[in-house]
Length: 363
Image 1 (cartoon, rainbow, N blue to C red):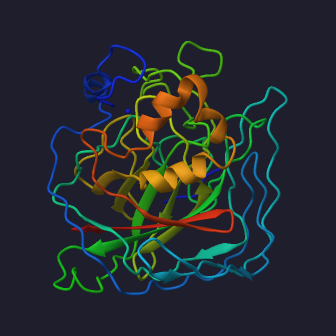
Image 2 (cartoon, one colour; image 1 turned 30 degrees about the vertical axis):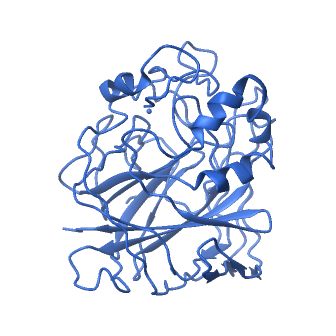
């Protein structure tokens, strides 16, 4: 990579079958593969702290201090801890504009996340290049826009409304495994040099990049999604809660983000697409063939999502009142066409730590 400067079958609030609407929009693939899961007892390698980069708009670069959080026990009874490696001081990010435009997310904090051991972490075994969850309409490739900020960053925190609470910090650790290796069901063999893209909504349910503010296509997470904005409404330069990292020798990437909020018509989820290193942009399309390796979306256990959303802002304000019914449906992680993948997740203090493994055929 070079350096440079969705559907729901549930009718929550109306009479529209939004699954059919979004299938037409490409938010879901129609072919659903068989997905299996296997545990893993291997440990991921550690990332060393790197020099801090310039902070993204609306964010602040990391301080470079080295800290280690206390160990905790996950729901699967596996001990895990998250550490922060020593890095150089990150650059200060630019503040939001006077008009209230949200920040773009941190561009390169100095603190590099160190993943916990991948014990009892769920694993997706890809049978097709794209599973039933599909790519969705809101993917942006690193090379799609020449005048864009770089998406190559670990710190992707940010939000649409700068006046809102920032949301709960999330340390997300992903491992890409080689499905063709005979010990996939054992410790697994990590695949290095794979470009892993993730993107998701901020704490209030907004995606970055799509739907100009004040236009007919502006996002409204409270209203049932019916195709606006579409995948072609890449109208803003905001890039919060999206980024790309290249897997290390153990097949691991890590992101510092915000636990996702929800929008009406979808369950809480995170998008995942991986490519061979050095892939090229194809524009506003669903990626298939060539450098593309695998596409999916994964979810969280409903009880865990509820424990975050009902305790912290800005999530809490959207769990009651006239949004209570839509919220209750959006945390179930059972929407038609879903991948069946639920990340391992737990709290360390007020930080969410989450892990997922994806086994693919890398060639």
